[in-house]
Image (tube, rainbow, N blue to C red; front, side, top):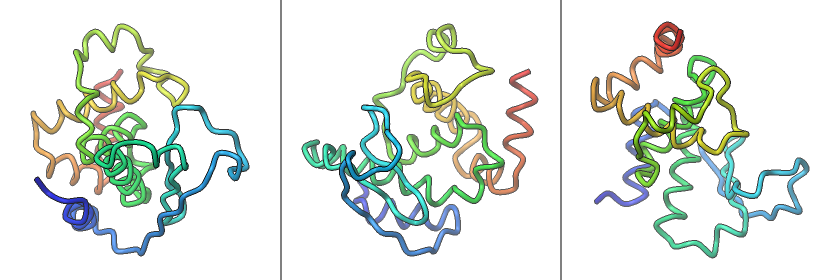
Amino acid sequence: MKGIGDKIKHIRDMFDYRDSINITVTSQNEIKNPLPDWVVAFAYDNTIYILDKLLDAPVHYQQEIIIHEFVHLATERYKKNMPLCLYEGVAMYLADQKEKLVDIIEVSKQIDLNNVDYSNPLLYVYSFNITYMLVQKYSLSILVELIKNGCIKKIYNYISK
């Protein structure tokens, strides 16, 4: 099993991301905009913000969250070319957040695929599953190349019609 440093290096190499990052622990009270209760971290401007409530979680979960948010920093420049479900799904996949792997058919019955956003808690389940299926069918390296060259959003928009 790779350690967190090895995973971060792998993600840096995968997305050609060389920026320095900061990790800051903060509290909900210090955040200007209110966040949903389920949020434990977020990434913005080369900084991963960890909410202090995450510090009570098991270390492996904290590491998954840090890797998830790091993936967002590494893929930020490609975000306009990625549907939201892949932006979140790739972060979950690379953070090894497999607990979200469920029957995609059941999830798709419960979610409006044309209106997927952060207000729906099933976004993450759907996102992980879609990404997992794409990696199984095509490979992670092909998915990353499609993201980097801007083709993935075109393909996704075509198949989701």
